[in-house]
Amino acid sequence: MRPREVLDAASTGPAFADAVPTREVGSFLAVGGVGYVVDVTAFNLLWSMQPFAALDPSVARTLAVALAMCVTYLGNRNLTWRDHSSSNRHREVGLFVLFNCVGFGFSLLTLVLSHDVLGLTSRLADNISANVVGLALGTIFRYLTYKRFVFAPPTPGLPGTSAPASRRRSTDSRDDQHDAAGFSSERSEPQTRAARVA
Image (cartoon, rainbow, N blue to C red; front, side, top):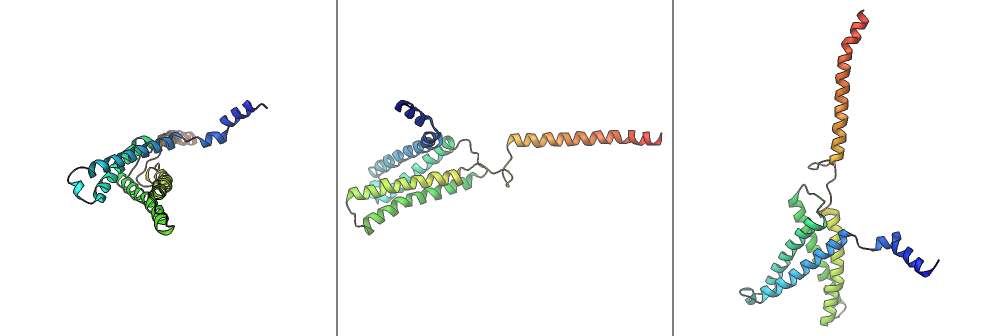
């Protein structure tokens, strides 16, 4: 086999297809990127205007994070997992905020580990630990928890969920057939009795 044929086979094989990010992953990363830009932009804007300029930077940071969280929730709800309907929107929002805060904790944990435990106190080390390693771990955690718990499709049979339309149609069809069979048996019963009497 020629080298070109080997490359073509590798590029079209299952392993290559599995390595390419799916639409869901691509959409999730795009929404996260937009949220990151909103976070940084809002923080700098708020911190440069009154009354936030006279307050502790954590106030502007908190508001920026809250705004970015709203953007990422709406993006993931309407783009990444738009096909997954939710039967309990309050629970969905609560889990989203919870897992978002835990994901943010990864950045804080890696920063503390690098800065305070390992003694890497340079600005470069702080940025790598918090904004590279911590951000990557937090992104992976968010994706897995959002997909599994926050925007998971409803499970048929559980309270508050509805069965798929195809299953409902199948059930209705079986019920109609059962009713038709019962009606037919009721009509044939008097005829059977008359035949016996005759």
